[in-house]
Amino acid sequence: MRRLELCAAAVVALILTANAPAMAQERCRLASAEPGAHLTGLDRHGYPLTANGTAMRLVDLRVADIVAADALIARARPAYRVLAESQPDRWGRLPVQAILDDGRPLAEVLIDAGLATVDPGTGAMLCAPELLEREARARAQQRGIWADDDNRPLSARDTDRLAAREGEHVLVEGRVVSVGERARATYLDFSRRWRGGFTVIIPEEIWRDLLERGIDADYLSDRRIRVRGVMLDWRGPAIELAIAAFIENLETGSSP
Image (cartoon, rainbow, N blue to C red; front, side, top):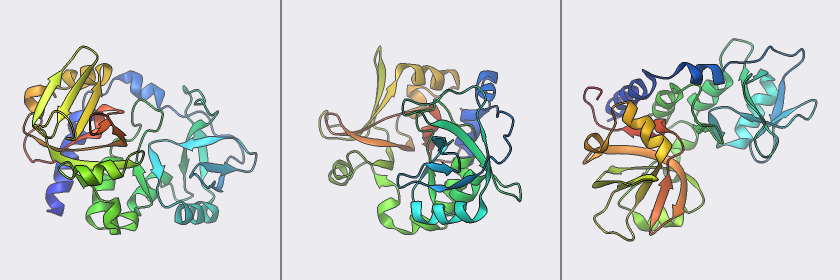
């Protein structure tokens, strides 16, 4: 089962990154390092702290075990660099990537240890989509937060449990029953009930991105997938897809 999950994650990562536009690579270009630019820890919300007090957020991930991650960062004091082409988010936080002294990206270390989950935050893409495969490995080996059943992926059929997680960032797995393409969004339904079943809402621009990569209604229909995002209440439990990479194929097989 673990091997199947890791293979599926690798397949979908290949699908969603093989044709990544050059513009995406440009958005992830790092600015020149500033002298003494080091992270000193995390605040209570999981955002990086620095000696000069600059507001920042870590690219590609959401810290889940803040206490353990804070201790690691305070001990390692990794250097950081800001994404060159990015602007602060609406809270004034700059997107940064951090590197430990031994050359390992902080994101990989936190994901591998099960201290963080993959999440672009307010970004429109992942700079390191390969983190999804690393997260799958940490989850399969039940490292860090993944040792707790409450943090592991939820079943799309368990609507009561899904509804109880409203407002939380969760992973959900299930089989797509139907795909409804509309002008402004596409809807993946995991139940034949119009109201009360779990739904994934795919905004128009993300659906276009998926279509360009060969992932259409025929491909998704009756397929087992994993999605992630903040649980909403929309005619039942729902997640609005933030980026195309957050649809993960849980079945083996060739790329579309």
